[in-house]
Every structure is written in C-alpha cells, then in structure tokens.
Image (cartoon, rainbow, N blue to C red):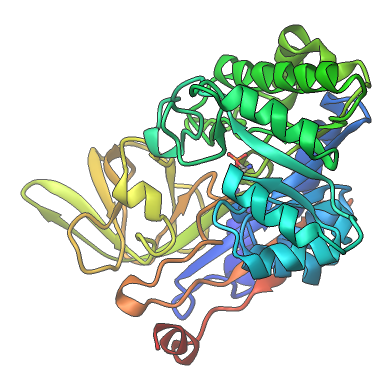
Length: 420
Ligand SMILES: *Cc1c(COP(=O)(O)O)cnc(C)c1O
C-alpha cells in the first residue's frame, strides 16, 4: 500500500490539485477471480454483478478473466454490451422491468430471471411470434430470513424480490407455471448481499434446488437445466484477511447442496462485492485538522459522495482507515480517537468516527480500505461534488507499478450537467 501511494503521489495521481482518487488493483482482481474459478467445478459459470463496479474498465477486466455479467438495470445492460460481453454471457435481473427492456433482453438473447407472476404473463405475451434465444427462469424468494443487515437481505419473509416460495399457494403456482411454459428452464435465487452467513445462503440455495428437482420430477424430464445461485459472499472489512473464501462457500455448498456439483445442472453465480472490495481503495488528502469538544477531526475530501453507505449506516459499513504522510509514508502510532470527515455540508458526513489514528497533519493522506466494490463506482451527487478519478494499477514482473485511467476526474461542467 505504501509503495502504491508513494508512486501515485510521484506520478501526480494524487496531490494538492487532485486531492481525492480511487485505485483498483488489477493483478489482485485477476487473482481473486482465479480463486473463484478454482474453487468451483467447470460447469459453474460466474457472472459478475455489475452494480458492484459498473465502470467499463472493471467489466472488461472481469470479461478478460473469463467471467460473465449480471446486469440489473438498463444502464448496466448497455454497459455490459459496451464492455464486450456477448449477449449469451449476460443475465438480466432487474425487479421492475418495463415492456421495452424485456423486448430488448429477449431480442438480444440475454438470459432473463423473471421476478413475479405478472412479469411472467408479460414475457409470455412478448414471446409469441419471436424465436426464443434467452434462457429464462423465475427468481424465487426462499424466505430463509435476514442476515445482519436488513437492507441487504433479500430473502426475508416479505422481501420485495422474487416469488415468495413459502406463501400459500405459491409453490403450486410455480410448479403449474413451469408445467405450462416449457421454455422456463432456470431457477434463480439471491439470498442477500453482505451480512449473510454461509449457512443462510446455503439454506436459500438448498430450497431453490429442491424446487428445481420438484419441477423436473413433475415434468418427467430435465426441464430446469440452470440453477442461478446469486452472489452475496460477504467481505471481511476488519482486516486484510479474505474470509470467508470462495473455497469455504464451495465446500459449504458441496455438503449442503451436493446436486450442484454432480454436473446435472449448469450453475450460474453472481458475485459482486467479493470480486472487487478488497482490490480497491480510496485515498484523500487531508485539507485541515482541528479539535472540537476534545475530539480530533481531520477534514478530507472523502465523504458520503464516495462512501454513501458508510456515512449513512456507519454501524453496518465501518471502514478501516490508514494515514500516510504527504510523500506517502505510512504513519504509525496512536494519538487517540479521531473523526475523519468528508467535505459535504451535513454533520454526519464522517467516514470514520472516534477511531484510533496516528497524528494527522494537513497534507497527509487517509486511505479507506476495501472500497473497490460499491463505493467510488457509485457516486452520489449531494452538494454537487464531482466523482473522483479512478486508476487501475498493474504491477509488472519486476514489481514496477503502472497506473491507467479508468475514469477521469469528473469536471464541474460535467457534474453540473448531471444535476441539470
Ligand atoms: C446485488 C446482487 C448480486 C451481487 O451481490 P454481492 O453481494 O455484490 O455479491 C447478485 N445478484 C443479484 C440479483 C443482486 O441483486
């Protein structure tokens, strides 16, 4: 980290005129994807959940590494296509699909997961008279309950996602729908995102596979050929350790849902956070320091515009913070509790609150660790701050670092055009 920061400062990626920037470690990301691919057998197809990092360069990196892509909005779908994914390597999961996006998905031959019975009727009518090129499934809500973060749990009893499997009549209605529509050849679930245990995710997948087995038994054939088990592998934000690993999850599924490993089904996964989180970070220059009411405060440029969830839900999305001097040397020691504040005009705009940090001076840099997924890639326009530049960094065999611009610093003109 120290070497990256020093080089970033020397090369002008960070400095007084460029006080906020984000970085993605491309070698690290490739290695993470190799670990994913090694953990599961070859009949698993891994689609990257584009919302975790929708930048074109990020999508191209995962494409080059052999992943497919999960898109959950018209914008993500177009970005996946621009990045170069073939339509048969994309799966579309938006909950609120309009008729026109459904037409586009079916026309392209992108795989589709239907959210509810009304959407099923719509798809049925759209399929009349056009050749079927998409793999189509229904998303079920296995209703296995919430993980640690309510807002991120998609398999609670009353979740907005999918067909609630345990609600009265729904299981039969699903069996009837698959019997009526032989073009339904997939079943999809996604139990949640961050805060879900392997056990909870495994229980959701178990119920999904049980439904697929029931459908196939009642069809008397292997009608369901694809099981889409979603993403949601949680990320450890407390240290550099990767835990749980993809291998831990694979082993858990091997024991709880062995059918996935027998080769009878094609299995799709949709990991997002676990691909990029630990391979990216945000660095901000410290503009000022002060104490208020005895509390040390470092005023920086990293606030809710790049760390929205951390600022609004600090109890669930605490980030590790490190301090470096103006040349990029790691500062050590503990000068007592400190708040790391962002530039936005509300008092809750803190990316860290009361954490033990070394002495901080103006011109130092703070680093927000593990922010490669869902942070700088999803900027928030409160106070009209421009989105920061993002650099992809590569390390060559000699250990030399190179930075490529994944996204330029947004200009004020551009941000004001977005504001309208
Ligand atoms: C968000 C989402 C994912 C990815 O979740 P991660 O926690 O980033 O792995 C996968 N599938 C669906 C349907 C999602 O909504």
